[in-house]
Image 1 (tube, rainbow, N blue to C red):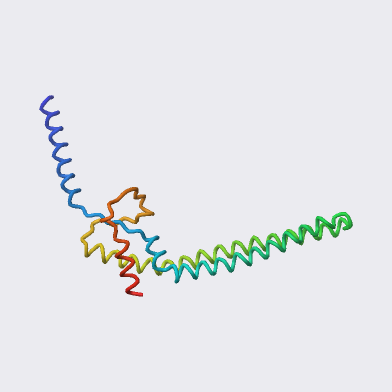
Image 2: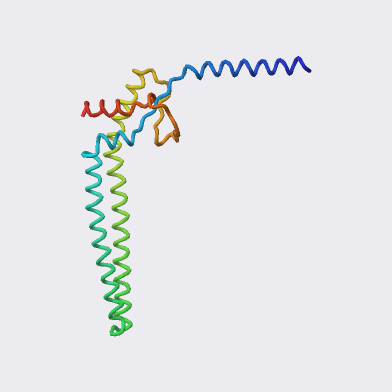
Length: 171
């Protein structure tokens, strides 16, 4: 029984030893894609997206103001309106509300599509460059800092600045 236990302990120790050696040879890199995007595209894609977002939000605010003004108008004239006119105004309000909701959904969908298209192209280019850097530096594992749940890393593992330089050079 003691021989089996001793054999098991030795086997575990050897396995852990091999695993430690294997782990010692893995080279890890870190990249902050979001940070790289903000550094390289703050006057390009991100500016275009912000401008389009602001334009559409202003349109939505105007539609919302009209809806609120209509509701106030109806509330102020309730006493003088007939039941039929009040129902008509209520239906008009519901129609305006539905149109606003539809406009908001369309806006959200269009902005997601635009963002995916514009940012997707940039991210593809950055992924290619990050892969090139990883191969050159013989990095076995490249983690995205914000998406990968990285809590701590040595600055020497970070390739973000090099990614930014190469991306800007290829622009």
